[in-house]
Picture 1 (cartoon, one colour):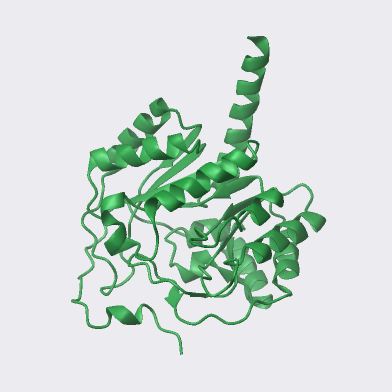
Picture 2 (cartoon, helix red, strand yellow; picture 1 turned 45 degrees about the vertical axis):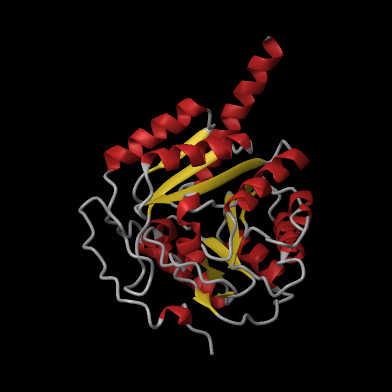
Length: 312
């Protein structure tokens, strides 16, 4: 029987702070919302929107946007910030790549985001399964751009190359928080292993956009956030997302504070000045929030850069 972070049962209860007025979402199109829900439920698929209790689910599903979560709904790790269930996962579903491809077609997605739970129980961490989902999706959705949000594949060698070789349009791996908070917030992960993963992807294929994200409100300092930006730029990351940490339950990592929208705007300006191609920074920003629109912006910016380079 799986449980949500069973190791935290004896931890002190961390009361959830009342949300400020700027953290509010609503359904904008009920027909699309329920149609998206029906397609996902009919095919028995998992989405990070549901499993991670994303605050943007109403808005995104109203626009027929969903982030598919492959390899089950049970993670082998127990990050203190995450609401995805922890436990022993089931075997991989060999029909999942086809189901994801079909759902992408039925939703008529221009841009699809595919993520997963951590599968440390698998020899390759699920990298081969990831690649099959990409290839199968592209077979019947040749005009759809594909973005993957992957685990770190820690201590699995170069298995991530299978995903890179499948040529997703965007390779995303979230850094999540600053190094000083890793042991408490992201146990089982290694900060510089995540940095090196992103760097390796770009080294293998410079044409793949790379992307990473960080949460604010966990107790990090401004200087620490700026250092993370510098580390990601060293890894040649193109796109940075910065969002507010929202504590899922009293047994999860305690929220330090709600960060004001003005601070998010300041971080966006600083990140752009440092050299990121695209920066999405707001309290409700998440990895796949407005991912289709942001990809279109990145593509235009790169084309503009290429034209400028040719004229020099």
